[in-house]
Amino acid sequence: MLIENQLIWHHTKTGNPTVRAIYHYLKRNQSVLSTYELPSSSRVSDPSFWKRLWGLKVSPKIRNFLWRVCNYFLATRLNLFRRKCSSFPICSLCYGIIARNSQGSLLDGCLTVFICSSPLFAEGIAMRVAFLFAISRGFQQCWIESDSKQICQLLLNPTSPTPWVLQAIIHDISVLLSANQNFKVIHNNRANNRCADWIAVSIRKGYLVSGWI
Image (cartoon, rainbow, N blue to C red; front, side):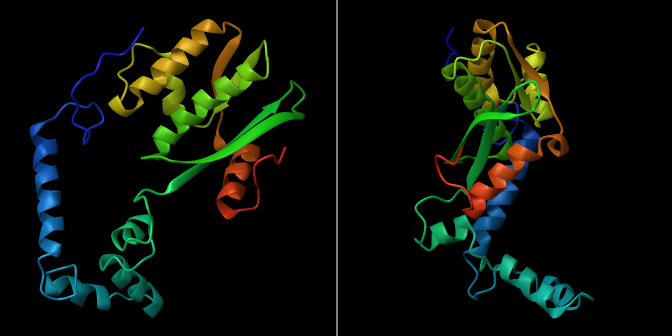
């Protein structure tokens, strides 16, 4: 079964435009546009803002950091993209997948880095890859664990409203779940899934490379 194409308003979770969402969108973009029209190098036009910032009772390095944030001086992916130092404005996200037996011993695993619009979307992608990974390894009975409670709830309760950004991914996983009756989706707190979390952090820091398992 295919999901029909539909028009969505990607500034809301449901994909449907509302008066409130449109109002905030226009106000937000009006503010962004006005910052580029300022004659000075400052991105904030309200003088009282800078007075309050420099008057904060914090260490000078904190005030300097806030000043750099407000002026887009930090080397974020978006700022690097604006300066043509990066080919993409969104930061990459990392995830690690591990396979363990019933005793908890490591059997296999994989890792990857990809560009993603949000952590929630990344959790959905990771869940789908985990299913495909288990199927490719020939696992006959498998529990797929995730620390994303929302992703697990959407899969365990098909009637729940699904954010538009996850609809295609949740549909794909549901199809895989239906085709593999011995597979189960289980929510697991991040504290109980430290191994996979450590893998993701190690990828981001460059400690692990492809073929680490």
